[in-house]
Image (cartoon, rainbow, N blue to C red; front, side, top):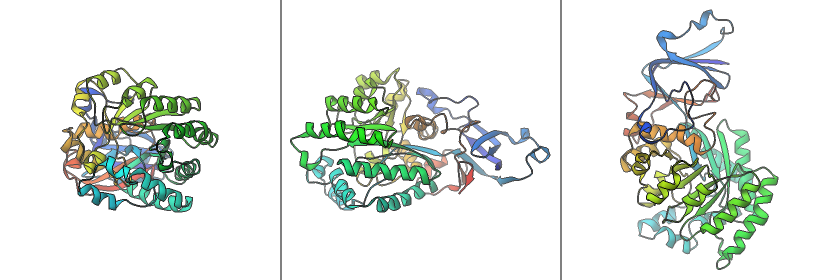
Amino acid sequence: MKLLISNIKTLVQVEETPRKWVAGTDMANLNCIDNAYLLIEDEKISDFGKMEDMPNYDEMEGFDHVEEIDATGRMVFPSFCDSHTHLVYAGSREIEYTDKIKGLSYEEIAKRGGGILNSAKRMHDATEDELYVAAMERIHEIISMGTGAVEIKSGYGLTVEDELKMLRVIKRIKETTPLTVKSSFLGAHAVPAEYRGRQGEYVDLVINEMIPLVAAEELADYIDVFCDEGFFTVEETDRILNAGMKYGMRPKIHANELDYSGGIQVGVKYNALSVDHLEFVGEEEIKCLKDSETMPTVLPGAAFFLNMVCSPVRDMMNAGLPVALASDFNPGSSPSGNMKFIMSLACINYKMLPQEAVNATTINSAYAMGVQEELGSIARGKIANVFITKEIPSIEFMPYAYGSNLIDAVILRGQRL
């Protein structure tokens, strides 16, 4: 199948030579082509350029049946890559939302059996089919909002059986959606109530029972740990990451959301693909991330929903670091997978330029989930995951119009949905 998108007002995030990420001051630069075309063959991007340079495909062999979309007045972006979500869950948590409004902290709600433990109880009671159906509704929602790749974590099971149940649902999503999906095993998301005072025993369970079974069924691409104040220590994280890496799972870390936890340092130590949240980042953490292969990933939706301090994104970029953005789509602290809104929050609350926000939600977030060679930019040979906007005046209008649906058409793996 061949699909030609012509008369594109602006083709955004174009690369002749694909990069692994964009860092520092380069994040303010966005490669674009005005008055452009984009040719898709089968699932891949085949060609692109200015309309004045577009070949006469009508006269070329093999181009008898080309579907054409006239994108006059509209822009084409690479689909968003959402590198941090928890979108497989059973039921919402709006009662805790009310508790937050009344002034209870994240830690206070967790101590009362809310938070992650609340989701774990609901997870235990749900069947795989129920979880799959609910998750696919969210999958269709984020596809309609421009997401073309998503990483999904376990972590609401907290027992051997329920963690495996979650990961099997994620595997089923991988097999039945055009999205590119990566899975992360997050058995160390919280300490179950029955292990309070015996946290070390739960860590042993994660290491000795959960990880081998997850690996045996090939259910996880990555291993994750919530290394933060009140959750898992650096030493415990160290042990869990070591165990997961022996089974081929590269680390990703929840780090420094609640305090300076040492999570960034242990993540870099083990060459984590990303360290995520990062509300608390200072000179020591930035120095640690410099010259590493670990992507600092900020989750503006969670900080917004929980009314937390904002990560010092500008300090990280000024130091020459790349930054990725992800939604943290989950029922407790970020109940939205709208990556366009994440861009808006990045601009409003973190003072990122729109161009920086685009880089952070495409090429950099693709790296943060290990798909930068396939997705994240408009480059020949990459998977054709793109969206066509409605008629908009500029790239800046995307985060500016924070409440408007500006997506006119979604194309995943070369197919218009």
